[in-house]
Amino acid sequence: MSQQSRLLKQLESARSFSKKLLADFTEPYSWTHQLHEGGNHALWFVGHMGTTDNFMLSLIRPEWSEVNEAYGSLFGLGSQPTSNIDDYPAVEEVLAFMDGRRQRLLQVLEGCGADQLAVQTPEGAPEFMPDFASVFETAIWHEGLHSGQLSLIRRSLGFEPLV
Image (cartoon, rainbow, N blue to C red; front, side, top):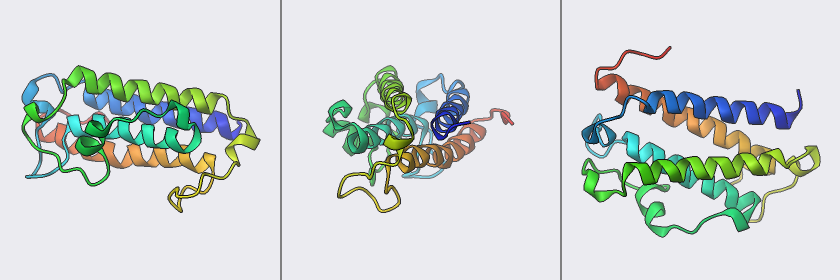
């Protein structure tokens, strides 16, 4: 299996698991349920995955990145989630943003051969993302980290474990 194929499979698997977790968040209160004050919640997770994929795009295909300062402040690095759903755009809008950004990221990866995956990221990229392949790898482990949080939030709402 090529590196590109492995990365595609892992990105798709990570997102598939996240979507299974998100399927139980159907009531407005569930989207902003927090385990503790200031903790992450499902809606923040969705927006954060979208803003993260958008950041990844800015490193490897900047013309496909979307400038969205509102989403950056709500869901970006250092943002502080609130339990008030009125502080956020509609759930459907944020879900569409997450899905759209992942689709674009996958499109970029589908067009990358081994040579492109070895291209260095631009100056200013985090040190742990020295090349394009590491950008995709980071997207995988980053989603896994936050889906663990999402799993705990889901369980605290009374849902059975998925695995």
